[in-house]
Length: 241
Image 1 (cartoon, rainbow, N blue to C red):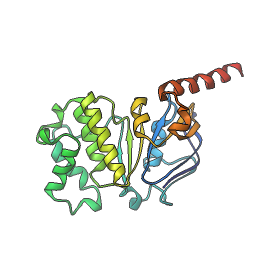
Image 2: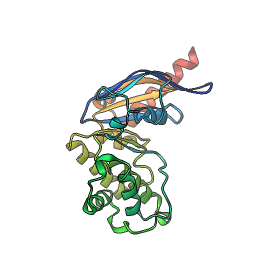
Image 3: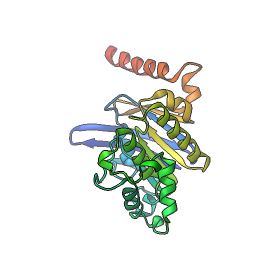
């Protein structure tokens, strides 16, 4: 389980997250929504142990994600992954896999399987410098699952993919859920979140404004419409105040 209790984070004088609390059950898909600058990426960095909260606590299965033993359970794809441009895709995935203790026993077939799952088998020996944006997104996803993590964090995983690529990646996310993986992702593509997610959280101006089921939030309307209504309602109340 992912547990976030009263977490706040500042960058200098700039507030990034304000008193955030979340509970995410194991084996679920959780979508995190919010306008640009709302605090989504900062939150995901705290959940993965990259950044520490200034206040509050983050726990994964009862332990801090900053512990190396917990990081072994985590896979993370940032919004804009950085790669060694002159490696091939397969070479990079092998390099990434060797950073984890649980990956030392992997065979060649394991790495090839990850490349195939990410839709990159046909370009596995291509230099990353020549990968398209969609290929890079797929490679970032492959990197996030190379250690067979229990918790997978994806920052804008569907951005830059064509419709076929989006469908394939959504299918992969659903397969991971069927293996009892817990998936947390940020996305601006609300139609995909509506289809994939069991639960959602909405953050606006660094504060959580909703956390719960997609169905309860949508109330028979599509997610994009309800999301816009909610944000406009909050903005309207702030302007009146």
